[in-house]
Length: 292
Length: 300
Image (cartoon, rainbow over all chains, first blue to last red; front, side):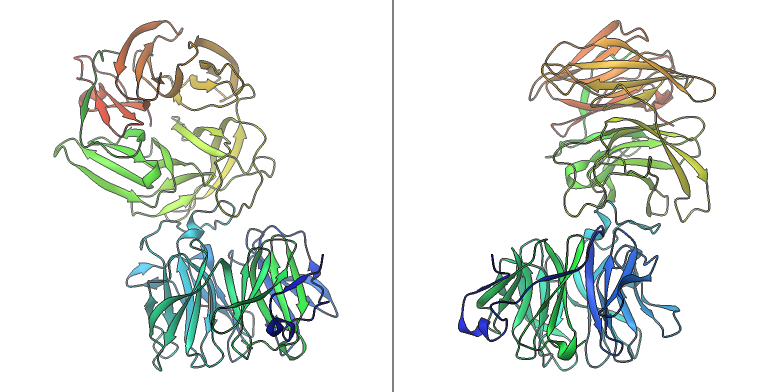
């Protein structure tokens, strides 16, 4: 069986019919949060239950990047090249400085401990958005020594302001929010609802506030990334669903295990890295992803 | 145990109740499917929300130092519910393995937490970090090191029973030298038993003694033990029927109290700790009239 399924000519211009989904690393407990470091050409991802951030490079293969990881989930890099993490059951958003030290960016919102930051994205103005759901407090195997009590019994997308260090609510209309990504021009924020299994889209104003939340696509999974043309790559049944900027399904990429997240990387950001089950995969594409 | 009649009190919940525990001036109880712990106050007679987002907590027990522990089913955790509102996971593995779903628990005079642990098909939603433990047993958590009041400290997990198949209710005799466990067979015909295990001074568990084998169709749930060593057992007999069976230490039935509901668990509390409280699958609390004589707490 081919690794891809084309449903349109547009898909054929994005993914070659003979593209192969390649296994890069396996044997982990639960993989998530891949992110490409363009400066040094390696991909990072997390094994949440294994409390580890892993690294893979074409030259060296897989190795441990950071352990313990505080059961971190989504990862990204800021414009200064520093790793920023959605800390999941460590109940914080943190940044790894170039000297390896950790800076805590957010632990509370509105006077209450934040929930379990799941996935994360940084806007061009340096503000950080993350999906702040409660599911991390419920899953066995992902605990830290932190307090697991939920104080704000609702899910929300929160935003950290780099100029004030304040945390505000971007929206509480994203359901069981999980994956998060901006459109290429940052005029749209996509948020996955992994329980309702749809992808929502929100308009983003110049000041970063969100409005007009609507369902962009159904039958989607837990994470989303976007290419420079605005096509949406989303985990879903079978692997990765490729949608156009109107939410129309163009085709699918099949991944052997259930996909949790994805990231653009490699030369020219044309490789799609996919964390799935116990493994990390990659697949070459004909398009170019939005760089973090 | 002087309870001869049970009367309903408080509002009826739409979901089943479990895990009652007396806190000295009120009754804590669980509403597992709503992920809540509620509290009935003895003075005001009001029921209020005590905790939310409790991840199917269904059993509660107080330790001698006053700490409250909970059996958090579906998350495979024993939790410490701290006084400041925080909730901490007691992290310990047995031979590197995560335990299954805690059903109920009791804390002995040394602060050791004994809990019934069972795996069911519906046990784990979402991503799983660990495979199920291949047995359903009574396990014991022993605190190795206490740090402060803001983290759970270090715990050791031990397997205590090797004969149980689906343990549920658990209680200690007043002198904490006998452990009582309600067990259930997992193959047809399904039979519930009450088992007693002697506990040595070193905390070693002796072999099981089946003190009562319940008739087919009677399913045993939670237990409590009074000062005289009499044991009250929550027994369900049908979809909406059940009873509280009170037996002596040898398993001989002293009396039964019928209920038009399925009891899930029971505990002692109230004035002189002589009131029997019962939680039911029908969402109703019941209590007995306190007798004249003094009887001890079930847990803690």
